[in-house]
Length: 390
Image 1 (cartoon, rainbow, N blue to C red):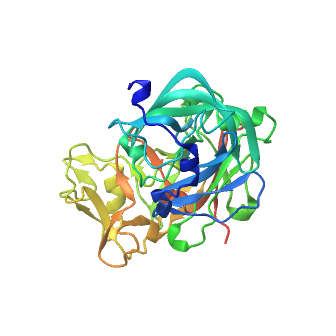
Image 2: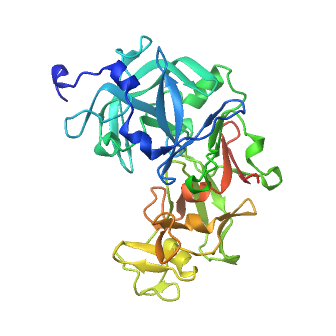
Image 3: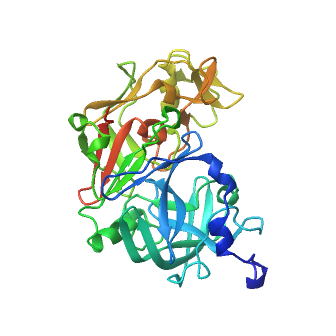
């Protein structure tokens, strides 16, 4: 840790008034009208989704990545430093200089993500999301952030974790639990409408304590039990279909993670997929990511990018069957990169990777979540999924 006088000073007036370079990376969502709901802005081309919080006294806007795959809330601190010893970039920061209600508890805190690490202290301060306000909520303020969070072109100022309390590393009441304890919400529920930048609708929304009926088709709504004991939101997968044909994969389950861009399925370790034939490699059944793509016409594994590609103009429907109902991925969501390309080969949005819970667990990110309305209920330990309203 650097000495106190080695850390750059923070000027709250400059931070509050200056435009940020990262503003150009965000598509603002339209205002919401439903109770306890806030707009979800789009980071770049559907990479992530940001909710605006009001923090401190006087209150200032902070953009937090909405992450149903973690349980803790944090923002950057006024004296935050990056891995290189420099400041934590062109972001908003919270501390005693900018907030008269800021109180540092002195309790250290650290967490790691797949994309980087952050550490600092737990603090108490005022927090507001939509029409919900907590005067003295406990959350993390960073003193150190890895480069993945400090870059000027990263538009988020922190993270709001929306997984269950049991997943919290901070071991303090989550935002959802604190709101329920304060009798500000009827049930411990987060609901999400994830928007698509290319549609131009900009109608993304997070709703706390309920579900917005204008966002989903009620006739398609299913409720299933959460099958994860660690604190993630995970549902049993009944089947996967490609153009209505079942892909035989065995028992699988899906962790729903708004903080992940892609659909992550297990892949063989140390295996090139060039010579995969008929679902078999060296006498072994294909791992999921390969079996899925072998069912997609025109899909190829490209060693140059170490990923599967699909035709950019594919019309194939890949669907997850959950609660005995089919929820397909729109074909243009399957063709992930290059963005808005209609010819040639595009990198597939179904990627191979390791999921910490094990090889029968998938990590389902925004690729699929853009196509459904998702709600997680900590009171009943249930997950609700519905098709989007027309």
